[in-house]
Length: 280
Ligand code: GLU
Image 1 (cartoon, rainbow, N blue to C red):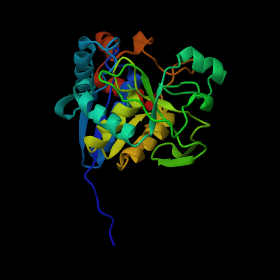
Image 2 (image 1 turned 180 degrees about the vertical axis):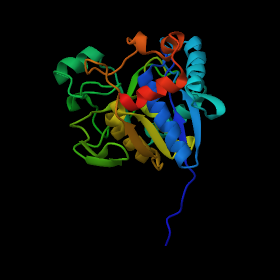
Image 3 (image 1 turned 90 degrees about the horizontal axis):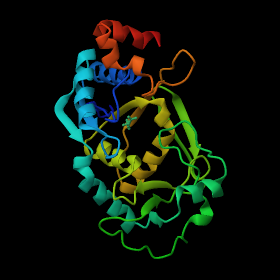
């Protein structure tokens, strides 16, 4: 029997919190190349849930910079902020299933109880949430409220070994509750967490392959738990190695000299910038 083949649908998901640098562009270029090689399609999603840090001029700039470097996509721009109602429905589903709990502990409480942060390398690293802070599994859940005014966390299945095959980084393993703990799905300022929003959006847009930076490998385990809890099939994952600076640090928005805008203003051509992708 032949395997059914699904048309490839990928996405670029920049956060408009600053100007894209050559490291972002390399990952997005990889995403575009993989979509092209598969004869597939590519969407652009703006990860704009962080209202304090996202700015409209960065939304404009990221589209212009991506096009300049030679990356294209279909169907305009999908804003995560415009999809918050969909994220909320998923939150309600998790609440009905009793898979989340309200958390009134401060970041500091968690940090102190957990000791040094154990989770490393990811954009949403947090100390492992102490099991002692959880409500009992059979404790009745308060309503979510609208707006939501407390943090809600996903209760991870304690000690469950997890794995997935990453198309770039190979077999990945983690143990839920040990390598990462109960994580935020909704914040007390009534916004969805990155983990929940990206899971809902990847599922509902029908993304078949996620290409992104290797700093999100750990987050993938959290997202796989959400996919399962919500009854959805996860995409495949390709976590591209991060580009490092000359001191071996990963590129960050502080590397202004490597922003695509700066390179362009210095007279670099798109082709010369693309050559940096293979040399990094
Ligand atoms: N917006 C995230 C970032 O800029 C990427 C999220 C994702 O690809 O899942 O790092």
